[in-house]
Structure formats: structure tokens, C-alpha cells
Length: 337
Image (cartoon, rainbow, N blue to C red; front, top):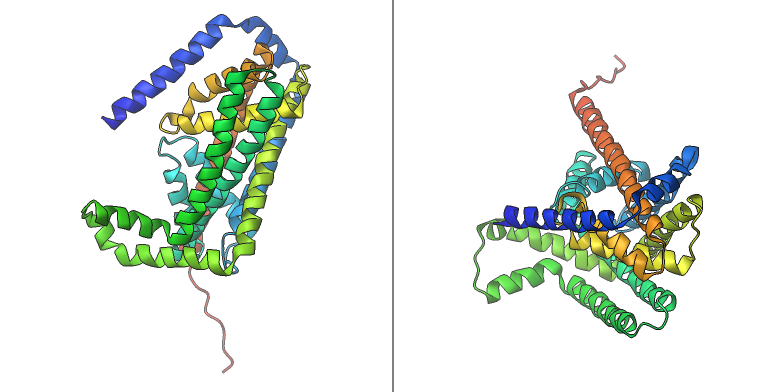
């Protein structure tokens, strides 16, 4: 049944994208994209910088010094994000891969798992704050549109509730909360019962992090928030390279809510169709030319393919290097006789 819903969501996204493309002047789109020429790789720079800030945000969620360096974390995170962008697993698959690779690098399972939870919380809070800023930007670029303003006010209110709820759940213990719900519903899950002790240990590590390392958590949220802001530069840069410049408020409005559209398509492989349709619809609401919206949607998809390929290559090299390290025989240290 779940597979059927995934297929239906994919077909719906593709159908919506096909409808948008059928209404567009595709000749103008291809001509505008041709203007990039040798400058096309420049459009990849903002998202690479986003990865740098996101990795820094992740590093802050570790309470102690790691056996792994920043660049090791960077490679591991890129590998995990490559999986998240391909597999329709609600971003769980990529996080599991990060934990797996970190354990291979000597990080304890408890530290890797707790950092994954805290990191995702920090990233989500930063994203919600970014969307709140984008809501204000949307009200600015949307002009006198009562429906849009009302919708953005709902987003602002909902954002505040989400942030407060996430902080409350994390401080109480996310796994303890889930265990409490299962107990309330009288559900006895064999997997949960088998690993209950480890789950509670991770929960204690997470709550201890919030209690003892609060500055690091705020530093993580700040790093992720800067990453979201840098992400705005992608559409802003592409628009200027294509000769269709836009304002920063327009860029923030479109980019922030594109991430929301992508999350709505998390069960579709790569959010294909959902992401592109979202960009076109949001771009029109923000007053962007339709040609720019379609060109950016296609260029963004091309960028994601490139980053996914690099991520999978990094995963391959990580596995190969770790296997080689494990297989390497230990060299006996000579002793003085």
C-alpha cells in the first residue's frame, strides 16, 4: 500500500510538472539557459558553501572532541545527503548512513545517534526561522494580496509553535516521549523492547547535551541558519547570470518555501515533479518571470544530480579506504634487545 501511494505521488508530481511545461514557452527557457555558457559551474558555488556551514552545524552537536576531523565529517555528511536526495525514506536513510560511517571512524554509536537527532533538530529550527523570515519577505513582494498575507500569518504562527514544540520534546526526551505514547496506547513493539535500554541511554545523552552544552546547540542552529541564507544566493545568482535579476526578498521567499515543497514530496524519489512544480508556482506568486522559474527548476535539478553523484563517489571511497585500513596488517614495533 505504501509503495502504491509513492507511485501515485510521483505520477501526480510529474503530471503537474508536465502541465506547467505544456503552458510554458520552452524555446525561451532553453535560450535563457544557453546564456550561462562557461559560467554554469559558478551556480554550484552557493550550495557547496551551504554544505560547509551545515557540516559546521553538525560538528557543534558533538559534546566532546571527535576521533573524526571536520573534513571526515564533511565527507560523511555529503554521503548521507546523497542518500537522502535519492531514497524516499523521509531523510531517515541518510541519517542512518552517517551513523554507520561515523562508527567506522571510531565514534561511539551513542554519540553518533544523539548527534544525528540533535543536529536534525537544530537544522529544523533554523529552517523554521528561515521560513518565518521568508514569510515576511513574501508579504513584502506579494503586494496587496489578502489571501497571501493571511497564509503567511498562519505560517508565522505555526513556525513559533513548531520551534517551541521541538525544544520541549527534545528537553523532555524525544525517545522517552515516543515510549510514553506507545505505553499509553498499550503497544508492545518487539524492536523497541529489545533496544529499550540503548534508546534510553541515547535519550539521556541528548537531554544532557541540552543541559550542559547549550551554547554549542545555539551555535549549531546559527550555523544551519547561515546555511539556509546562503542557499538563497543560488536562485539570486542564477537569475542574474540568466539576465533576469530579482531582489533578495524574492529570492528568500522562493527558496525557503521550495524547501517546504520538497519536504512535502519526501516520499517521492528525489521529490521529482513536486520540487519543480513548487518552484514554478512559488516563483509566480513572488512575481518572477515564468521563464526564470522553469530554467531555475531544471538547473536546480541538474545541480542536485551532480551533488548526489559526488556524494555516492565519496561514500564509495570512504568504504574502500576503511576496508583497506581494516585489512592492513599491524606492523610490530621493534624492541631493544
